[in-house]
Amino acid sequence: RDFTVIWNDNDTVATDPNMNCVAVLGVQGADVRSVHASLPTGQRAFAVQTNDQDQETEDVLITRCSSDGGISGCYISEGFVINTGKTFKNIQVVDNHFSVRLVAENAVLGPSSPIFFHGGEVPANIDVTNVIVRDNHCEGGAKGFHSSATGVTTKFNSKVIIEGNSFEDNREHGGLIYIEDCTIENNTFDSTSLQTVTVQSAGIALYTNAQGGALSTSIRGNTFKNVSGTGAIYGILVNPNLSCSHIIDDNWFKYEDSNAPNYDVFFLDGTGVQGDV
Image 1 (spheres, helix red, strand yellow):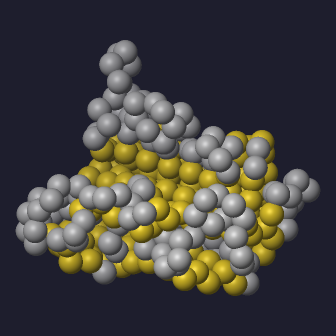
Image 2 (cartoon, rainbow, N blue to C red):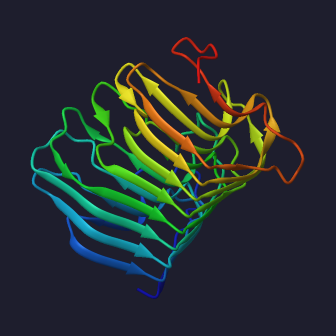
């Protein structure tokens, strides 16, 4: 606690995509508090993860920390190597300020996001509970929070709670989620420079694919102050398949910049055509 990490790689070689300023893995009980990470050319400010066989990462709290300049403010990973016996429990990211720089989607370091969730293997060989992201101020990047796409070999297994955060000045989405079990409540979304990079942009975008994705999501009590920019933009975008069960309730859509998105809530079917609500 109470220290600063500074990383500035001035040479022309691309920064190591696995570089972290502060990494927590294989630890049972960690309190990372009042740490600042400054990385103008670096990748991840903070990382919480489990990788190796029988590795246990649990009871981790990252709080009152801050970052500037990275690609990820906090990288949360269940690991990507097929190993058995891993544990990833009670991970909390609370009351932090993460500011990240924008990186193009196809750049070497990938998309930038203050909060990034990386899935583990399929079938799941991991013991998980909740990941809680609460009361953080997150600004900049392509997405405010972002999960890797569910694939044939990877998915995020933990239940995720994203609550009471503010997401500002994001370029593509306030949040992009492929997580099966996720609660998004009482957050604020405020971006006026969204750009349609692929098909649509949104305050919150839920996606599924043939392997799963956002199957059970609760979106309640969120405030959408500004969701505007260039292209097809929505307050909440849902691209469901037949096994989805989402609750969208008591959200506040009032756009201070007077530029409302195309729709407050927009549903697509599996072919990209507007579906039934």
